Image 1: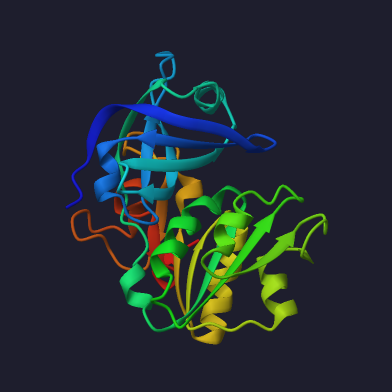
Image 2: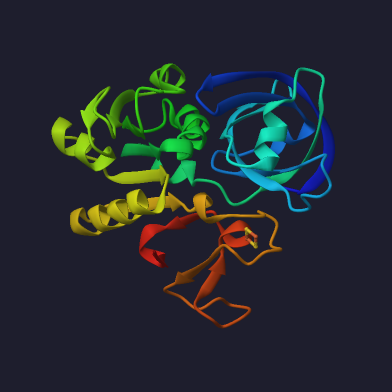
Length: 261
Ligand code: FES
């Protein structure tokens, strides 16, 4: 059962994967309930930054009670996290969000698509799908040849790379990589920047494919406090009767056909 709780956990290990990209394993009992596509909120020790930072779960190790997060340093909060070492205390709230519907894609041909810092949640998703889907093609887009998590992803499916500068794989974006490699799917699970998710929504509509997209890029506080994450939905919310949803509390994963982005 997913019961959210706040705890002071301990950093097991941290290393830098690429320019500004950090890879942290955290020892926490929250690993037991963590699902692919969920996230945790991380609080800073510097109390002048009151709101926590939502960071997606990259990998789960239930046996050793560990969660892995891979994040980009973008401001004060993440700069603080990047300085943590093994043994550092880290205050986290989790596990949050609905996650990807991994069971629903069993036996199907799946695209797992990630762009930039939307790539990390696709690793645990790929791991969960392994042996369950008919075929898993993992299509990931980077700015350049930073290629973080590529080797990890290769354990769970065929990986296709797109880079903005053409330094590795297809020059362009993930849609260009699909086209260049003539790939096909029945279901798409994706996480990444809005332009990428918009392109996937359009592609899914045109090809009559079910697509689940994680809108986590739009989150700010991750805990329902800032209202910075509201998205327009097709259906009215049962409680508020408006066509709005808060990504951090209702998502972050939606059927692409249900949201207007
Ligand atoms: Fe702040 Fe959703 S991210 S309310």
